[in-house]
Each structure stands twice: as C-alpha cells, then as structure tokens.
Amino acid sequence: MPSRKPPPDPRAAADDPVVAALRDFLKPASGPRRVRVAFSGGLDSSVLLHAATRLGVAGLEAMHVDHRLRPDAPLQAEHCAAMAGALGCLFQLRVLAPLDRTDGGLEAAARKARYARLREGLGADDLILTAQHADDQAETFLLAALRGSGPDGLQGMRPRRREGATWLGRPFLNLPRAALIEYAQRAHLDWYDDPSNRDLRFDRNFLRHSVMPRLRERFGGSAGLARAAAWQQEAVARLRARDAARLPAPDDMARPWLELDRLRPLQASEQRGLLRQWLRQQGLRPPGHERLQEFLRQVLAASPDASPCVAWDDGWMRRYQGRVYAGPGPATAADAEPPPDHLWPVEQREFVLPDGRCLNRDMLPALGVERDAALTVSYRRGGEQVLTAGGRRSLKKLLQARGIPPWERQRIPLLRRSDGELVAVVWPEMANARS
Figure 1: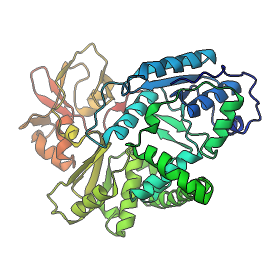
Figure 2 (figure 1 turned 135 degrees about the vertical axis):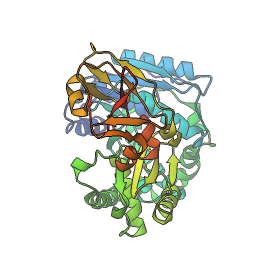
Figure 3 (figure 1 turned 135 degrees about the horizontal axis):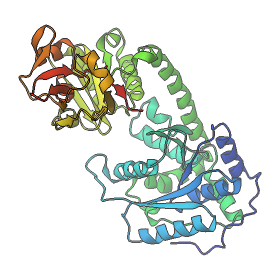
Figure 4 (figure 1 turned 180 degrees about the vertical axis):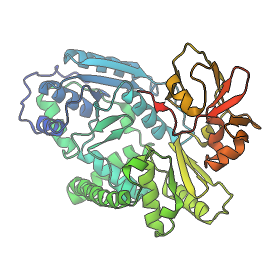
C-alpha cells in the first residue's frame, strides 16, 4: 500500500552518498540521449528517480511495467505516475500481456517480459537505470552459489552491461540498502510497498527474509558477499579476454559460424569458455552448463554427416561441415517456411530482402542479370536449375558447393525473369546491409 509520508523535498543535498554514487556512475558516460529509470514505485527505485531528478539528468524518464499479477497493480501504477509527475519527470506505463511460464517459471518470465518493455524505443546511446544495491548483489551471489553456478553466475550483477541494443546501468551496487533508506527518510519520500516482495514462495524473497537476517546477525552485513561477486567479475573478465584472443579476427566475426578446429585442441573447460565467448559476440546469451557440455560432446563425437542441435531460451546452435552455427530465437525458426515470392518491377530501383539486405539495379549486371529486367525474388522449393554462363546448374549442388547449411538454403533469395527462368542466386556476401 502507498505510504502516507510528505512529498519529496527538492532541496536534497547534492553531496549525499546516494546522489554522489549516481553522479559518479553517469560521469564516464558519453552523453546518453535518454536515461530511462525502471520505476516500480518501491523504495529503491523511488530513491533512484528522486536522485536523478535532483541531479538534473538530461533526457530522464520513468517507466513502470505492470505485470498484471496482482489485484492492486493499477494502484501501484497510479502511484508511480503521480510521483513521476510530482518530480516533473516524463512517465511511461507498459502493461504486459499474460506471461508465458513454460520456460523458467514465473520469475524468469516476468523478468524477460519486463526488460523487453524497458528496451522499447531505446538505442545504442541510451541507458536503462535500475536501483539494485549491495544487498541485492549479495543475494544474487548466494542464489547463484546455491544453484551450482560457475564464475559467470557468481559474478552477480555488473554495474553496466549491454541490454539488447541499449545499455543497462546499476549505479547503487556499491551502496548498502541502509544508505537508500536513510536517503528516503531525509527526503521524505513516498513509496509503494509491493506485497509480493514478502511472498516466500519466491526464492529471492525467502533468502531475503529468512536467511539474510541470520547471516547479518552472525557476519555483520552483506559487504563480504558483494566483494566476492566483484572478485568473480575480475576473474570472468580475464577468462573472457583469453577466450576472445582465441577467436577469429574482428573482421571475420560477421560470419555466423565457428570452426570446430578451434575447439578440438582445447581442454573441455576451455572449449566451453570459447564457445560461450563466441556466442556472446554473436549477441546471444549462452545456454547453461549441461546443455553446452552435451552439445560439445555431440559435435565433437558425432559422424561427419550428423547435424547435432541444441536450443535454449535465447537461441540455438547446430553443426554442419566442421563448423558450429548459431542464431537467435527457437531452433524451429531456422526450419521455418521460406518467405513468399515478391515482384521486383523495372521502375523500382531497390529491393529490400527479408534479412535486411538491399539489392539495387546497379548491382544486377554483376549477378549476370540485365539492369532493366522485370524480376521476381523467390526462394527454394526443391529441384531448381539455375541458368548460368556455363549452362543450367543444379541449385542444390551450388548450395552444397558454397557450404550453405541445409536449414538456411530455403532462405537464400533467387532471382527469376518474367518467363520464370531462374537466373541468379543472391549469396549471403552479396547485396548490402540497409543503411
């Protein structure tokens, strides 16, 4: 329920440790155009939003994501809108559709959906701010340890990381929650107490209310656990730097594959590390240890004509002809139906392909096609023959010779003349990314 405390005091001290932490966090940033606070209306995010307004952060806005999980959710959203308005801050509300709980349960589904909304409309120079603090970091470390996580999990939350096409920042990770409570009391903040934060069915709530108080009584706080997470971050940074040095040169990373010969000479732990680092550079969150280990076992031991596959929440991996391929989304997306055929009229100078590349008519002569030909962009259905300078060639054999994986062949664009003759194949290295 909303508290009944007085409204925020705009004269909050600029030298407050909370304000100083936020100011120091934002100082190295190269001027983000928009700074979006993930605003639940609770104490922590209220402190963050209040401190950001006192600093006069440019491009500041607050976004509240309503998960539609509690009857009082509309009241919480109203409270958030009112507080943002009182602070003179732009406010946005996002209401989620019913959550898909099939993978990872309710907590994971809510988190995934929430961050998807927080990213909406933000770009590479923008920043999402969340209010996690040192006590949250200690809980994250313990949860990871209890689940048997390796260094990646034990490093906890990073102060700054990529979140889709934008950035996510946590300026309060070095502050105990006590510092945020003191700030809220001095500023007379009005915050919303979310009753679900006391629901012990959730792992983090159980740890927070049933375990952490006992640990604080015995060991005097959470600072040691937060420091342990920081040490793990240093260790992970060293491991990732080593793995990155074993990967292809940056100019070659646009290729969506990794040669198995880079993995074979390595120890099992090094193979896992290298594969994780390659997946991150492909923009994918790596799968868990068990799935990664099983995939490596299959790709290194399976017969040459096999195509082992592993799928997880964020993507898939497959092997083909001595290479590992990866992509986003479910593995079934790689086997989806090809796109429909589309006419490319003579008067239309450019044609944008479904993968975002762009053909223009000045490129057609290099493909062996007349610049002013009326064309249809089509896709493989099976049995096609391509008219080349040396006669008709089997499309299947051309695809095999190029090393195109089977699951990608039906998405390779083909150019047909108005008489239906297949006259060109638009290979992946052809055409340009649309600017």
